[in-house]
Length: 253
Image (cartoon, rainbow, N blue to C red; front, side, top):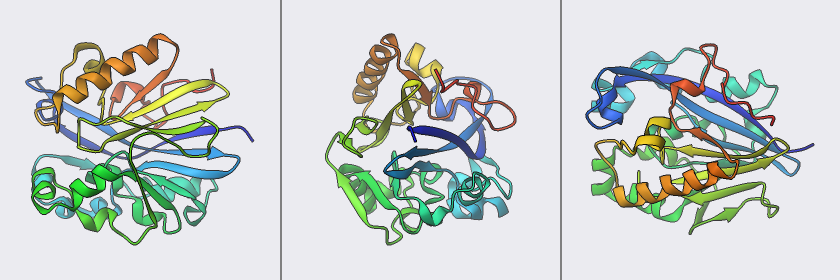
């Protein structure tokens, strides 16, 4: 079996565009994606979408519930998405979180037997009470008793270059993206280091960041990668997803 990527939207959020892109007008509905990566030596999930509790209201996210309108139905949570692909959530081997914000860790609880892989500086930032307060980290979403492997920079998960965590600090202190090499070429799942192509093309950043300088450096790196043929799947770009929840980016060549 070759390496395969299965994109799965695990909920949607609607928000004022200016919350994501500084000074941009209007409203935007964004996908909250998770990705199943099947490798001959194990199954990986990269980011896990929204927590199933949010199907019943925004209470779990506190004040952010006044910022986001949640569009999230039963069957869209990570466990259901996996089972629809005939994959038992209990059989996922690795859980890679790009970072620890609520819309990237909500389904962590659905993967009880996975080893969690996160950058050390992200884990430490989320564990600092003051940083956690400012950045809306909620330990109840991600500190769930998983075996945790804390990374210090780039990490080749299977040792063959096919699934590689790449540090993309800036959005948060320890943000990471995922580079996947498969039969169709090379794909980078940017997560929130680059929300959407408008950020990539125009350097329009959100009104908050751990480091704008680091974010700019990451975008320049992504631009260089795209010029050499790498496909970029941005963190929350509606243009990259069809209305039926399938991805609009061809991944097979």
